[in-house]
Image (cartoon, rainbow, N blue to C red; front, top):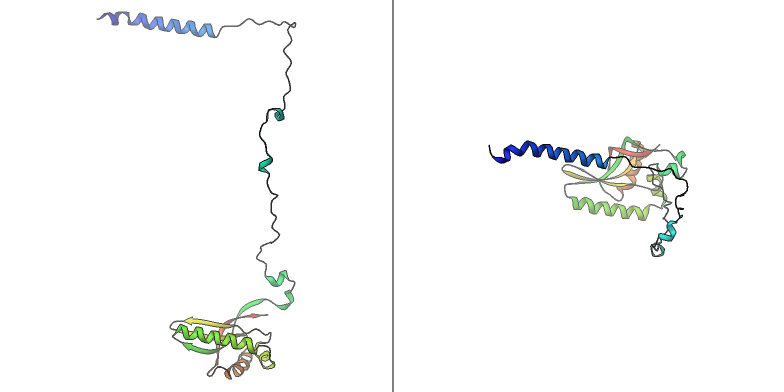
Length: 185
C-alpha cells in the first residue's frame, strides 16, 4: 500500500468536516435589534418622466384608415331592394344555335359578329320581342369536338321559336335547341 492510500480516509474526513463548518458558519443566526431610534431613510418618489429620455415626436403615427366598403355574399338584387323581380334560377329551357364548327377561331369570329350586331339592333321594336328585357346573352359552348354559338335564355319553346325567326334574318340556318338556361322567375 502506498502512502496516498493510507491517508486517503483521513483526507476524506477532513474535507467533509471543513464543508460542514463552512455551511454552519453561513447559516448562523444574526443578531437583530428592535431599536426605534433609527427610522428608515425616506423614499423619494421618482416619476418615469424624469428618467425617460426618448423623444416620440418623430414617430407620430397617422390615424388608421377605416374602410367603408363592405364585402358580403348577399345577391345584388337583395342589396338594392329588387327582390320582387324574381330570382335567377337554372331550368331546362331553350337557346337558338347559329353555328356549330370544329374550328375555335370561327366560333370566336361569329360570337363577336353576333355581339356587335345585337348592340346595334337591340333598341329597335323587333328586337324587344326577342329578348324581352333588352339583353340577349350569347354563348360559345364546347362539347367535343364542336364549338357551338348559341343565343338567348328562353324557358319556353315558343319564345325560342320567336327569337329563331328574328335571328334567321341575320344568321342563316339558326335553329332551336334544348339547353340548361338561367332565367329569372
